[in-house]
Length: 438
Image (cartoon, rainbow, N blue to C red; front, side, top):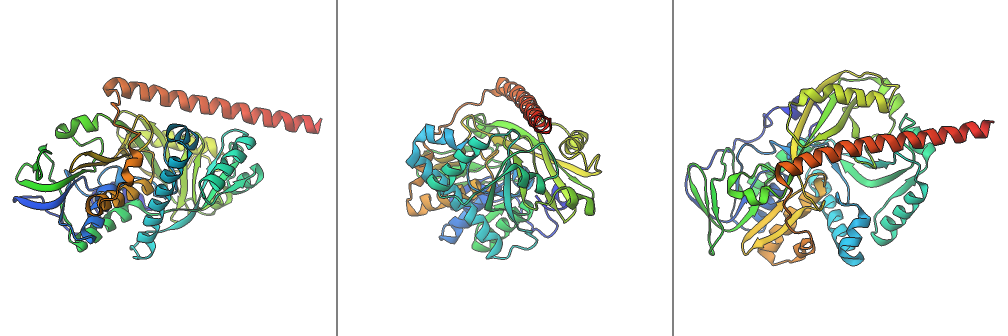
């Protein structure tokens, strides 16, 4: 997602190279379905390794979630680290975590070493707690630094509030190696580099049917047929009828974000921290862009709506968390649908011989899509098998309409619960302060 709202919500970048639809039959080594972050990384890495690659995209590059995100890159997964250890054991959890760090390193190298234009990289990410949970913080810091070899710092309440001018947050965990980029520029740069490496990208080319049997798999589009030795399903919840069994394992979640008008010096007076900020309950995610604008993501819904409807809600949320900012003017609102898995981990691996999946990256971050793309390309061409680490996280039906309704209710309950426990924590803090004064 770019640093200005206008390019965040429009169609493809004006300077993006034209990519025509597939109008002729084609034979390739690898066919990638979906031109998002994961699919383009597969295409780039496979083409670099000498494979012939075709990418089929039903709309245009980065049109959905991949082109509409806040661009934060840090290690880890949506599944809490304690739950990850409980699910697969400490050793496998450490290997999975190391893979997530490799994904973050991949994005950093791509954004810096190859000098992507307009990438706007900034350093550091801060996870703040809505409650006073110092003991939990210490335990998590020990797990991250000692067991998972991740560079982290614990921030006390005073330091958090010195950087963020609000009394709503308590302790924090600072990730100095995390960073954020303009995600939209990144996805279009991936597409341009994949083309230069030899991959062929076809937009406005939806997949009508797939026959994954046999050595050469067959893909049918509205105007052409394609054969490939390997198919990589790198789509999201919009995979459609040919891949409905896969798309139904994802819960569609729409998250909307807003970018404010320039706020001038008063923004820096309230928010001194220049990296990304997320709260421990996953309610808010924000950072400063363009020097004096605030970009804020909240809330989520399992039903699609017009983005502008969420502008007032985000405006109220900013005023609630940062009363000193008040009612800030909103430049615009954007959003996209992500696919969230039931188990909270991405879907990465081989479904059957020659049929691969790289999906379920909702709430996961850019690092996981980069890691998945590189891993699958190497698995196909080099025979690597690290994707088997994700085997415990099988495809699970997301519940259809019932699952979406349940997800919406759980989200409402989670936001309500977060507000209640946060208010209680702040009340107790005030009571202790009054007692000390008395």
